[in-house]
Length: 605
Image 1 (cartoon, helix red, strand yellow):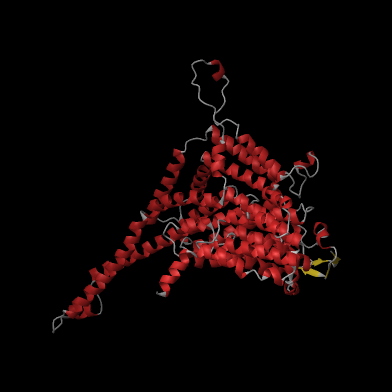
Image 2 (cartoon, rainbow, N blue to C red):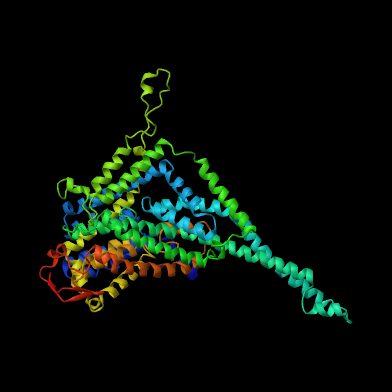
C-alpha cells in the first residue's frame, strides 16, 4: 500500500489516535517527577495536547479536571467544581447577553453604517472606517459575531466600487489573454514579412504599429487598475478580522483571555484589586488605539489605499465608483429609518452598562462602589443587574391611553430580550472553557506545579525585565497562532505568574502583556474564528495573511511594550513588588531587580 494512502487513512482517524497515544506517551511524568507536581503536569500536558489538536471538543477537554484531578488525588472535587462558575463567568455572561440584545434589534448595523457615512468612501478611509467600527463592536460583541456582521457590509461596498468580484477576476485574466494575443500577432506579422521590405515595414520590425501600441497600453491600464482593485478588496477583507481581534482586548468582556487573567488573579492573589473593568479599559483602550492606527497604516500601505487621492479630488472612473459606494451606504442607512423605541432603549442600557462598569472603581478617582459595603459589589454584580432589566423592559413605547381605549389592538407584551434568544446566543462552551482554565490554575497552585516550573525558568531572571517581558509575549503570540487563545493563556498564565515570583517582578508586568499578546493571532486562517471567516470567503490566500500578519505581530509586540513601560507602569505601580503578591512565597528571598528607568527595591517575599 502506498505511503500516501496510509497517511490519508491515518489522518482520518488522527483524533482517536491522539486520544489513545498521548496518555501513554506522557505517562513517564507520573513516575519521574515529584508525586503531586508530576500528576498535575501530566493532566496539564494531556489537556494542552487535546486543546491544540482538538481531539476532543474544547469544552469537553475543559471538563477533564473534574475527572482527573480528584481521582489522582490533586484537588478534591468540592474545591474544583465551584471554579466553573466564578463571578468572572457572570461578568462574561452579562456581556454576552448585552451583545445578543444589540444584535436582536440591529443596533450594531446602524452603528457600522453611521461610521462609514462619516469616514467617506476613499479606500484608505473606508479601511479605517471598517477597522474602527469592527474594533468598537468587538469591545462588546464577540470577535466572531463582529466579523460575520461586517464582512457582508464590506462586500456590498466593494461591489459598488469595483463591480462583481468574479467579473473583476475575469477581467484580470482577459487582459492577460489580450496581451498574449497582441504579442502573438506581432510575432506572426514579423514572420510573414516579404523578402523586400518597405521603409514602413522595416520600422514595424522594431515593434507593433500605432493601433497595436494603443491596444497594448489600454490593456495594460485595465490590468493595472484591476490588480489595484483586487488588492484593495483583499485589504478590506483582511482588515476586519484583524481589527476585531485588536478591539476585543480593550475591555474585560471583549475576549475570553482577559477574563481568564482576572479569574486567575483572584485565584492566586485574592487581595489583588488592581484590575477591574475601569482600570483595564483605561490601560487597554489607548493601547488598542495605537495598535489600530499602526495596523491601518500598514494595511492601507500594503493594499493600495495610501495615495494622493486621500488629499486631492480627481474626476475620473474611480471617483464615479466612489460616488456610487457613498450612495449605497447612504441608501442602506436611510432604509434603517429613524431610531425606534427598542433601539433607543438598548442604546441607553448599553451606555449605562459601560458607564457603570467603568466608574465602579476606576482607581484614579473614587468610584460609586464606595456607597456599598467594601468588597461586596463587583463588576459581575453590575453586569447582571443591567442585563436582568432587559428581560422585562418593553420593546414598544408604553402608552397610558391604551388602557382606556377599548378599540386599541391588544398587542402581546414583548420585552427587549427573551430568554430563548439569550440562550441561543450565549456560547456556553466558552463558559465551560473559562471554568476549565480556572480549575487548572487551582490545581497548579495546590499541587505546587507552578512553583516547580517557575524554579526551572531561572535563566530568564538574568535578562532585563523588559526583555523577558517581550520574549514571553512573543512566545505566547506565536503559540496562539496554532492553538486557541483561551487555551494558550490558560496553560501559560500560572507559569508566568510563578516566574514573576522568582525574579521579584510585579506579576502584572508579565501577565498583562502575555494576556493581550494571546489575542494577537494574525498570520494563519486557523489562528482565530474571525481569520477563518475572512479566509472562507475564498478571496484571500494563506500567503496574504502570513505577509500581513507577520508585520502585524511585530507592531503588536512593540505597542504592548510601549504601553506596559509607560502609562501601564504608572497606572498599576509595576515598579513596586505589591503586598498582595507576598503571601504565596513568604519563604523565598529575591534579589534586587530594575525595571526600565525604575528601581525595584530588594525584598523578602
